[in-house]
Length: 162
Image (cartoon, rainbow, N blue to C red; front, side, top):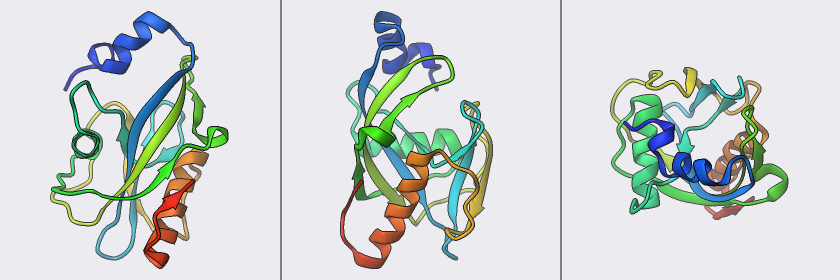
């Protein structure tokens, strides 16, 4: 696993500094067999969110989500099902504690079949835990909207655009 400075985004940040970057990426809602969703307590914002990230150069978005899932939670999944797209700048423009700013364009995925035990697998999280959708902890607003969109998708079968 490469560190941030070796990643595509890390190398881009070396050129553009903390200016706003338009960034594609993905998020994954992992649901277990009893309907709970997996959240990670993020080390950057000290809030809960869902796993996700940006692809590296030459990497397919679905492959990047499966890689990020493994890197962030230790879980292996063979497939991720797209269920929505998030791009509302009011929620998807993020300023990180270090001053870096990104406006995200995020394909939302669901994983229901996986192997392994959820665990903190990198320094991006303080903890990973399963939560019922009606008892979510304090979350980043864009991440909460992601879980809510997933619940609407499950009920309606309609692709969600948020």
